Length: 351
Image (cartoon, rainbow, N blue to C red; front, top):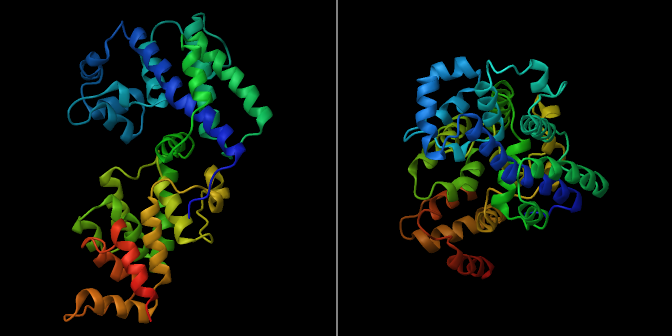
């Protein structure tokens, strides 16, 4: 089910991964020095002292709610969990009253501090990628951009060996999810519009049970998933679980790909670079086993559903209305575990 990305996707991913890994480290290191030589473990005290609470933080930094929440989470703020965007906002705040021009922050002019100048270049580089309308790069573009970005990072003190490691990185699904957070990020306004469009499309087509089947691996033996009354409630459940937010909508992209709802065109489609190539994306939030179970759901007809019902539920038959209802019952009972799938498939082939 999951298709592989081609070379032009991989070129884009390599720079995005370098940005995510080494770019964030460089930004974090610069902020700690700019804030008076903080140690990472002192960061929470710094946040509380400077911003007092979440509401004051939003007012002073003019950040989104999820950003202020990451500075005031339960258990205290962890600087290692902040992204480049929020780190840059904190850097700007730490330089207030130090003679930095507004035009310096946008790159129109260059500040006297060469390190700060490179931090600004790094942020501009990141924003260009975050708002890219394509997740592909030609080899020539990759060579040019890699050279530019590598120089910025080395000027900020990043070891060339670390940069070279990123150049040869082999990507797994977890890496791709991290990368997608860079260029799938959208504003709160656009996020709400996307969620509304998604909910209406899937709700009108009564596709809730298909979404539930896909998400079973993320909610093992959790009755909340089984009992959600509608798509909107399911999306809220995903949000509460930390699987969905405005900086990470990969799970919805994957759901669209797997359920083959390619007619879905959200109103903000022009702001969603990966959407144009959604048919060819690699599924990263669902395992191969989940995809096999989903394929089983598409394969089962009324006769096969009745056969499975008799085999596993006799004498008290459940008379499932469709294959998705059967799967939602079978998976929590362990009847479709990896070591049971062959048995199920063989039984279905019996005459």
